Length: 121
Image 1: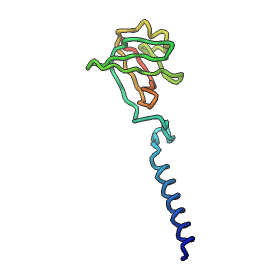
Image 2: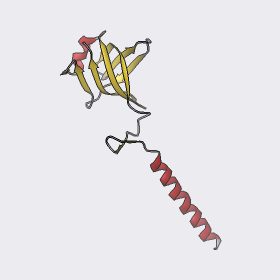
Image 3: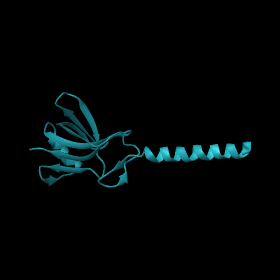
Image 4: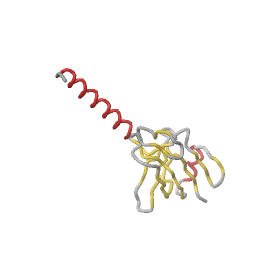
């Protein structure tokens, strides 16, 4: 082989390898079979705590866990909000401060994104 052919083979090998690695580092969710959000920093987590504040303008619910750590949970249009067994809106949570909640969220670069928030009791 001449040097041009050797260089082209090396470049092609690097391209193929980098494409394979790039595809392999995309997380997938088994239940949905889809690629997870590129912003996701990990798997969905569950948090039990108390609602400390609701900021309707920023779509944020501040939740304090049993250790005293506060979490700013971002509410999106896809977030399922419930009080007991009833669906509610973000504005309804403003009257639920100091009440216990369970939050399922995904940590992302833009913040902790709520999948669901359920007020207990």
